[in-house]
Length: 239
Image 1 (cartoon, rainbow, N blue to C red):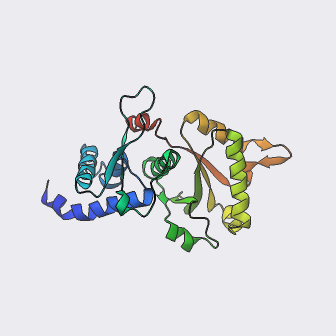
Image 2 (cartoon, rainbow, N blue to C red):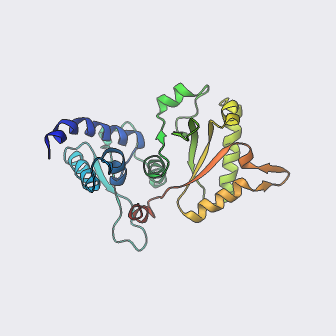
Image 3 (cartoon, one colour):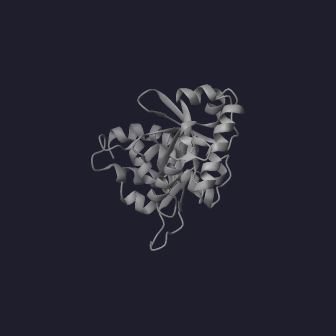
């Protein structure tokens, strides 16, 4: 540990805890990418991230848990959450944990970085704020900031498409975001945990519907690959 580490550690610890509060959980590769990037910690980032998380666990500020083991795997990937008495949010069920992980992966570990909007930020941003369970992220797409509503794909592609159509109608009529959609500043992002599912959803939203155009003609729609507990270990190994 260096003198610089001693001076920066308290601020970094607070930043990591705020990050976990926002995303509801984190994993070491995300902490490495955000707080110990390769350009600043060449060859040391992963270990530095693991050490920082271990210290926060030892201090009782974080709790280490394991994702369920995937079939054929000997151990589940470790993730970190705030202690129950430190978090205002209830613990997520398995489906919620998967969505939390996918949200984190999209924002911190995808090729294009995004930032999850907090509830207070969405209330300030939107003319008619959506329900607090609805999640949004913001990203710089090169032509300016782009806000998207994210949600995990359903098992059935047709159900995913039906949900998208419903969300687009709600955004226009209920949340008064028609101008945002038409200008390309607001859209939707479906999170899929396998490449085959990404391809299936992407094909479905760009295909012409009976008596109508493609769903992608109505709004900007992206389909992003983001693992769930069942394949996160493999995804981490491929980073």
